[in-house]
Image (cartoon, rainbow, N blue to C red; front, side):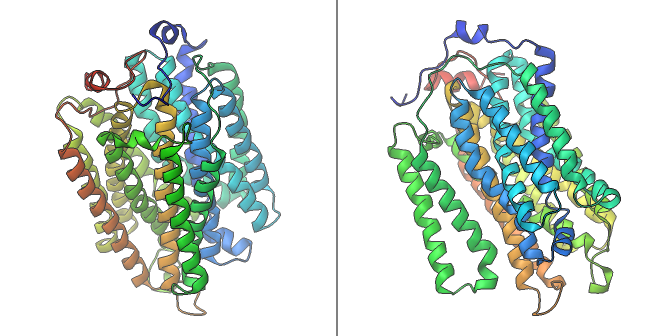
Length: 500
């Protein structure tokens, strides 16, 4: 074990760590994940409405979604590191308070700048899911923890089908800001439930915060997303854009080097050397690009007026309802994957998930002429996401010590949000490039180009999954397995992780 990794909690201490309300704990943790999903989805269906309401371009309004992912990518590892110590419950409450304040700001009709500030604060809540997973692993018996961790890993995808229709109905009947008032009430309820139900974590030593690593990550992520979002407007060959892209590469590379040489890094990059952790993170990131690219395309396409020669001119409510099959399919598939865990290995399931997701993009390219076809396409995308997200947490949990679960899962969330942010920004860039000067809408060919980009993302993900999972041993875990008081590293931990 690497000398800077803290020792795992002794079995006696782990056993003594039990919640005061054990039956309520899992529902409360799942509600945290659903809150994150709802908050993250508040931006996408409203993008055309935000552009019209606040008199900004659609590509500028896209930042109402992208900024949440950007802040989430930075806040998640910080919260994960703090949550691996004795302050996990306080970190969860702080994240919920940020969501509450951000929702309140976004609900005020004070213009795009205020909305953007509120959406940024809401992004802090994106770090709640890894902390919920770490809490489930510590507080529940292994069998219940296994199921809870797998369910929590799917909430960010499944919640989209809840958040989008809710956003649509509120915006349609009560105005654009009503969805954010709903987020205020939901965050307040989650805060109170956490106070009374979520237990304090086991006693582990607190580690110093890696402020340098946080600044490098924040600067690199911001530079990367601004490069993607503003490339069309600034010019892809312009000196300022090239300088910004170079800065993104330098800052992110500096963050990786800093993390490798730091005693207490924000995220232990060295944990990624486990092949299961590596394949989980790579497929999560590249697959995230394709997933949010597809979601952004669908939400804009179905709301496009038929006068453009394509689209359906659908309301925000219809747009949200079209994403319900995505969430339903992802939840159903996640359960099936856990049931088939004994028979199917990650070497088979991860490429299968990528293939299903790729098929959904192919359907978008060839069969987007009806709302029924788009609904079926989103169900197919949900099947792919359900398979992938049900497998990746087990690969991570089985490859890291118990004391590093929060940090390792936080890093997985970081790469997921990097993928989501890139997919969101990329969709706006491609469609903006397909919009003629002075024209309000892109051409239909822009959607075809974006769809091809999504196909490429999932094809790359599938190749990564096939190559890396074939190099793993047959005993590799295929579903989430949870250890409490287990050895922190080495063959014994991996052998235990492979047991049913």
